[in-house]
Amino acid sequence: MNLAALLERLPRKGIEDLDFPRNLLGTFRRKSISFCTGATDETTIVYWIQSRSFSIDLRLSDAATTPLTERQGWIGDTQWDEAARQLSWQIERSYQPRNQWPEPAVLSFIGNCVLEFAPSGAYVEDWRQKSSSGPYLGLRLVSMINEATGEESPLDGGLVIAGEHAAFAQSRLPAVDEALRGVSSLEDALAAGTVSEAEIESYEVSVAIGGRAITYSTQPCRVGELIASGDFSIRSDGKVAQERIVGGELCALLYEVDVYEPEFTFDTRTSSTEAALNWLEAEKCHLARHAVLVS
Image 1 (cartoon, rainbow, N blue to C red):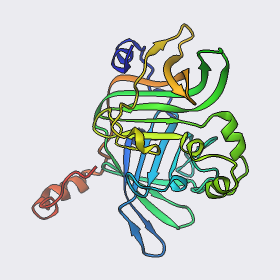
Image 2 (cartoon, rainbow, N blue to C red):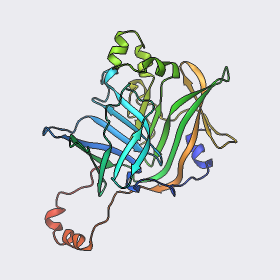
Image 3 (cartoon, one colour):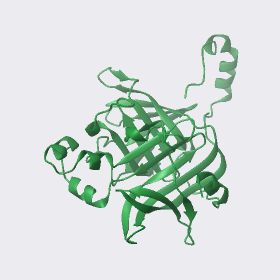
Image 4 (tube, one colour):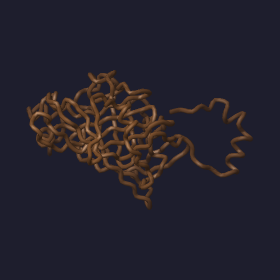
């Protein structure tokens, strides 16, 4: 069955045991990052898509021409420290062989904005919620089965549908991951012949904004294709299987269901005091003259 049929048949799995603020669920576009140096970047393409327990992140300096060794993308388990109001991610496998963003996130929320402050003071990122409502699906990729040999191998990744938007991540094959273990950079690994260009690019992070066709990807050739094509099935153990070509061979990707809400409304507002709301209403002729929702 296709993705639409999967959404019709999959049992609901809610967010009742959510470990972090609900404002973080959905699809976030980075509007800007401002550094302690005074510089601000409003151009780099950055998306963060959050499921119930994991997130997918894509960062490209240019939509189609980001150099092979400079692309960034990952999937990570979300970890929330309530006392410190800090969010961090446990990342096992990433497009890059090193963690380029080691600081946790100190978060503040207002409206549809998530403001992320680096504890060191190095930067602040302004994220904007893009999801409004619709199906909310999080599938965490755990392994794959080679259809010809029956061999099962560990694989990291996931698929998130958040209303109008979607994201997909799939790690490299275990042998490629092992070859990259401990290398200082992809540039060095490529120059040394440790891995090929195709093996570097085999780590996929793709996002589909405003539909199911891929808008941005660590694999530019995937742009325009459906983000979740292939035949899906629900196994007797509750896992979801998806047929996909991996490394030139037909495989079944096996996912665990992280969340599934057939109809979900994402947060685009935050609470305030009655006095503040009265002030906004009284001063709206000035305050709201040019104000629009920016996502």
